[in-house]
Length: 75
Figure 1 (cartoon, helix red, strand yellow):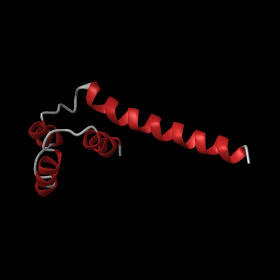
Figure 2: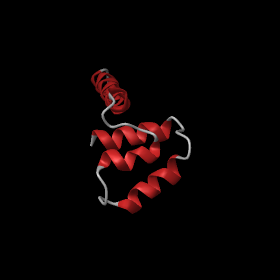
Figure 3: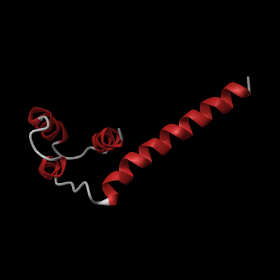
């Protein structure tokens, strides 16, 4: 799931040629190891910075949830 969130964050950041690369990735299915599939993106799954994007998105979602709870309690 963190992989999907990281990809979504890349999309939100306007990663160059994201749609084209993502569709190509989907067409490949599981035909190659993930590390090789993501080379076409210019991404290294072993680089912690790659995963930090997804973690950042999770943090944003948690903070948004907390804010909604605070507002609901304040009613």
